[in-house]
Amino acid sequence: MAHLQRVGFTQDFQVLKPKPIPDQRILAAHDPAHLDFLLASQPEDGILPLDPDTWMSPASLSAAKLAAGAVFAGMDCVLNGPEQRVFCAVRPPGHHAERASAMGFCLLNSVAIAAIAALDHRDVNRVAILDFDVHHGNGTVDICRHRPEILVCSSFQHPYYPNRLDDLDQVNIVNTPLQAGSDGSVFRAAIERDWLRAIEAHQPDIIFVSAGFDAHTRDPLADLHLVEDDYRWVTDFIVAMANQYAQGRIVSTLEGGYDLDALAGSALAHLSALA
Ligand SMILES: [Zn+2]
Image (tube, rainbow, N blue to C red; front, side, top):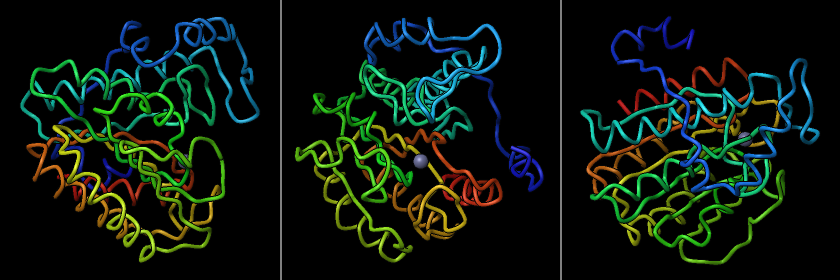
């Protein structure tokens, strides 16, 4: 947000504040026991681990509900309001949260919750979720695998965390594994090879993006070598798909990205292409 303010981006575009996602929207994507578990796990002070990666503070569940609420509000803006594209600058991320479990810093799967909610809209019969985070979007796949109206395309370093649900072979789940050390040219060729045909066949009415920027070459968590220009390229690709099939409608949400300078520059490249 500081970088977007510094370069004047936030002056040119509207910045909205989200409301928490209602529980019934969470329960359309997650098991009721999962929400009960998160409520019961909330510490009164300090921080407590749900697993070695995923910790909760007294404010974590509120933050996760606001993050999911932002993606939901973005979807509502794009389908019912004046906007064509929305980016949600939120944390925590969501794409590792499965139907019944929190993992990988993720408590609620914001993008899956909003994608399922979008299907309630009269103009929406099919949805696509495109995930270029360096980690596989296992939670999104888990929640959407039995919903053929949702296409999930995920590119990810492989083999690598989370090593779950990355070998499903079904029409609405497109997995694009990339070897450690792959650079932008490998990434671009794989996206064109795997995603283009799947999106053309699915013809989504709205596109959601799980925009993680941890495949950046400077990111400390993984070993792919993307740069800002690769994020501009993949966003241009997504915009072209949205313009062709989805009346230009895109709701993008932040997932990973752990080198703050690389995150800021990559998010700006993504936003500039969306704009
Ligand atoms: Zn990630």
